[in-house]
View 1 (cartoon, helix red, strand yellow):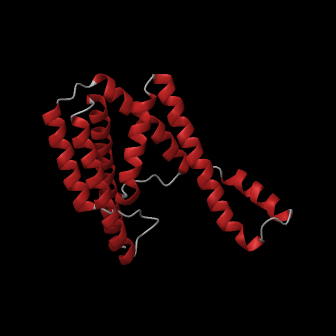
View 2 (cartoon, one colour):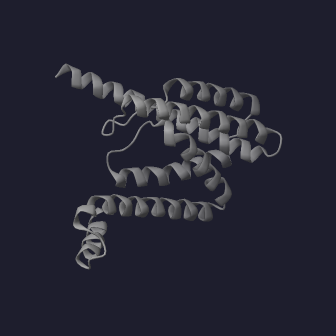
Length: 196
């Protein structure tokens, strides 16, 4: 999304002699990631402030990212689509928190089911970034640790704060949905590739 800007900045820094030309790709990647993450965080904060639900938006984002980092799942090929979908997702989550009446037993059943599905499917690799066997082992282990930790947070939150419980539940369920969509996308892609 910020590739042209990053290239200008990095080329300028190379011309000034502050970094070597052979380090260009590393700096491009790092700078691009910095801009993407910064804009995503600022957008999340802005959406939280606009809706008056900053803490819910923040908690959702943290829990979602902690689990999704190693579970993998559906990704857009374009950074722009990814950014737009993230903003839409934040609004949808806040709307769900505000307008859908959640019952603790039903929600807990869905959270446990989501945890089981995530445990079984993780990690789901991206089509354009496949994982080798070692990476799959490490990601699976870390995903399962994160799943257990977040499920623990969910259980503890039941006794303290209903809204926190709802936000954590929605985060877990959302990651599960993206994991299933990612697995379907990967299976379809693999099937098409094998037919060629």
